[in-house]
Image (cartoon, rainbow, N blue to C red):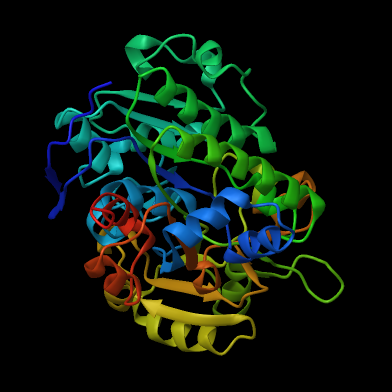
Length: 412
């Protein structure tokens, strides 16, 4: 099979791919300790070998450490300030609407995937979550489908028919380990059948939301994932893997959810006039109950902003509070999609709006979530040795959204 090796440039970065398959994997919610603990049990042979033969290190993700934000960063190679996706959910001030950011209409940057396709690569995007498909397939002439809706894939809209037949597995339940394993199996099948040679495979974090790293369910999942990554390596692919965010238990010493309901707190202290947005909000209610460690506050009385910021900064469990200008610069946020204040919490604390907005009865386990600083650092693993220039970059301040750059340019 002939593979194009034409260079292409997108968002200011030139990519010079080798004439062999390229696979980038986003292991959704994979805090580094999941890899360490599973490897310590001897159950990650292929990822361990990748780490020895290639590279393994830590990289900084985009904030807020949520799925839509970081997947958008990974496929564009730029921060949220550039691509415009500031959460899974936001308040559109101009329209006075609270909406999901699932549409590519919100994306302000071209993708590496679309550019690779234009350069002659056979590109495929397989995502576990349907909510990501539209953003990831922006302007893409190629294959794009989700594990969640694989049985609905059509040639005209998804780039292929009979996804289940091609992969060899039925459409999995989204709340399962199989949802992520299906994505990896799809990647193997698409390469082996000559349908794709440049792939982005984005998993789901249901297992990490539900099970701690040392749980047998986690160990078995990572072992199964490692097996599929081994099959990807066997195709001759250069494989890069990172995560969109980490994951932490958000509970107190009694194991109960450790939640600060920020809108209630503000109303009790200052009266009305506040709208708290939880950007983690998405359709997957069994994951986190719309509770994460990052919220945005819209303040009706702008003269109060500084006073409110100072008060929030002193509350136990809150670690950072930033006004719009600081959030735009320090947190790399799009100014017009950021509220008056951005609030982040401690490692074991989540932030909510009011109790009635968060149904924790749907959770399949204890509350494990993400969104703030403590889920910002994630692993980066590259299957092939890095050249000298990229080895130096790796020990600087690399980002998870440099993964395509490292996988393509760093291994030449």
